[in-house]
Length: 307
Image (cartoon, rainbow, N blue to C red; front, side, top):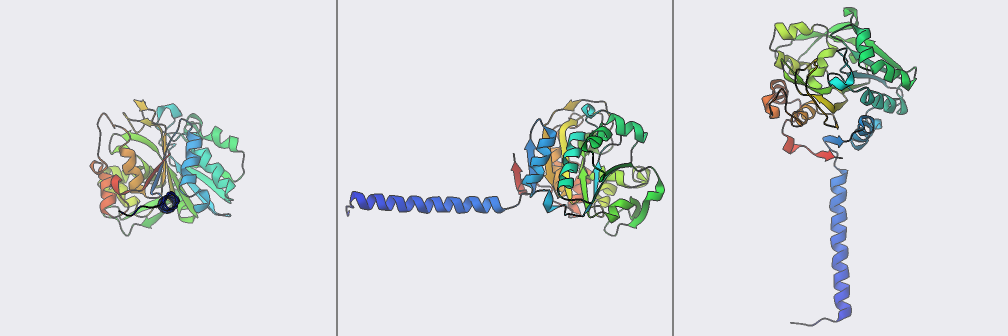
């Protein structure tokens, strides 16, 4: 075996170390450059978690440009306090609103089609107070109770919901941001992002009474497609949803993404719902949306960034 001098050994070792270091840096940069499908942030501060979740997904500027009209759909359908977990946390909503203002949005409309008196929903959910603190004339909150504000659209890719009346603002918006809350549901097992879109159509009873509700929810997602989804899983209503009161679980989690199936599928895994653990494929409207190629249901196939 040929002997090498100490100087040669040091030179070879140094060269090898540089090569390995270069390979490691190249591998890290490749991983860092790939955009995540989902960002999952664990924090006991919902507003900070929301900001971090959006920033790690590419920043609000990736979705909202200067001069854009933005429509935001939280769940504020019930006149319940945030602690009940049946409505979207106001801190999450205002965090998104502030980011949109900073991005130069021309106008921001926060809307829902409530299940109770609008004034009570706005007050008891804390949404109106939170928005008022933002103190911007660009922001408006509207509880859409008049049919004239909806217009009929045909859902060309739907299976059972051939047409429905959709709120006009969705058709005019440059950016649509869906901000659901994670909760259980008596009819659909869970109510997450896709289920939250029912608050943008006029005749919800038709889905409950005339067609298969689960397929109908998936059908809505063929037409109403959020630019960005922020899942509020800071405090989840895990029993007696959608209204409560029921058992809540402090999950301290905010999820950001653009794939409605992936966001909902991941949220299923965070807790039990009505006393039972589910696989995403067990939830019929999520499974139907996946079968219609509206997104990815297999968590293992997702690039998930966890903070």
